[in-house]
Image (cartoon, rainbow over the protein chains, first blue to last red):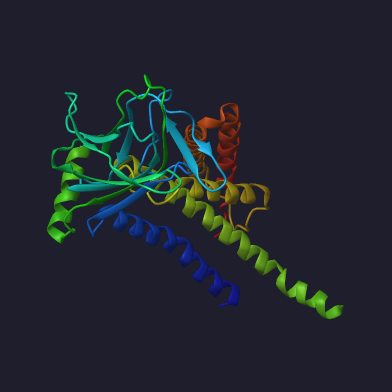
Length: 198
Length: 136
């Protein structure tokens, strides 16, 4: 056997094995065995998990500065969706924003698909010297509903447009959590997904 | 100078070029199959691939390796295929070309007219590249 043939066989094995290994890795990430998923959106790059703020018009186009990106909310309310591979028990949201001190800000998660029902919480954050605020909000997702594997959040600031004010968002980070995956729960999830698909 | 010349002859000999062609050939077919398998998984379980991996990377590998095979000379073959096998082969490659062209078109829709041209070129490449897989 020539050296090139041996080399070719090794390379061929690598070429065939690479997509299989990659798939196993992606499937492992998809299962989220630890029960913890952290997703973030910095407005500079699209996130596979978090959608852009919508609808257009209520938020201005994303502004890209040298070191960061930002988006301004001018009309109340705006929404964003989070695409989740599974349902979670809790969500811990970290928000970086800038708003006028007198303007209130609320964050909510949708509780029902049929009715206008949201679990809303006040956003109260620490303000640094530059005027940026950093807030942390907890949500219990037991009552939250997923539509097409998407969890809808609302950002509300009543009277924003009438006062001609704006709120600037810099980053959004969400930590989802649920009990860690066991073999039985993994089989249960897999069967449920197959059943849902068919 | 003579040493350098020999060195290049040693590296760029026929076996190495043939080896590279075979490797790229394998890369093309494996990445093509991988692309469709991943796409199927993504359609069934949304996010399983796209949450952590950009499927366009595989699409680029398919197109680049296909482009290379399209413009390279065919790998040596021993005998021609029978007519019935050739007809099935023709249908299979036509099917793959159409599917690939559609996938490229829908994935690149943001580029408007350009997506149509890239899809047509992609489809043509896939169609003709199947003829190049002739090594025994």
